[in-house]
Image (cartoon, rainbow over all chains, first blue to last red; front, side, top):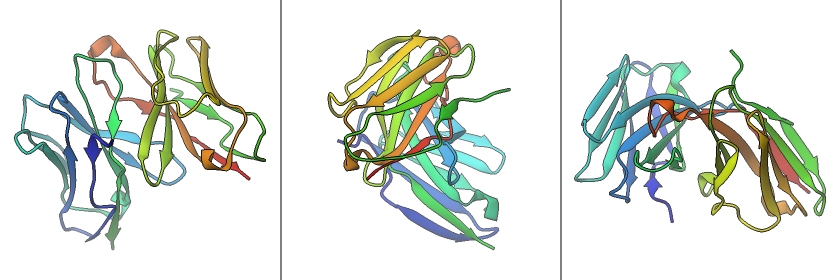
Length: 113
Length: 116
């Protein structure tokens, strides 16, 4: 059973606009969340993370928001660039456990020039 | 600085054959993970090791799958006998626990496996 869900398999956004990728989780024990970016024929690469003690973390054009009561997080990319076109995976873990991550099924972002 | 190295990048073989996927983690990392990526389930964790010891293999789909980590710099994932439904991209990842749990995992570029 998927504990981390990304319900939108794809998203298209115009260059310069905001991209919003969403992720929901079911396990209330999760307390650390990560976003990975994946280009074709490459492995996923770490993008940004957030601990459950925060509700927002920002790194340049990328911001992750966490809503613990809704068990929901989102990744905002502003402004979107064509190079951001990739598959984005949401992942979650609980820090008192081991280092294993639970991944969503991914959202393919296409940024249109 | 070398990342996680997987080999082969592509493998095409016939049903029933033995398949061995290889992984070299980043030096100094104490966790190693094997994942399988499919359209339906995304990235599925198959098994992970800590200090070369298998910790959780509950994601291994069947007894046909086995994984070993004989030393800190090498791991294998073996499928015997292989079946067409095993076709997927298999990723290896490693991480370092020294800065606390939940540290980002570093992925290799994967092995695309096709079983005919």
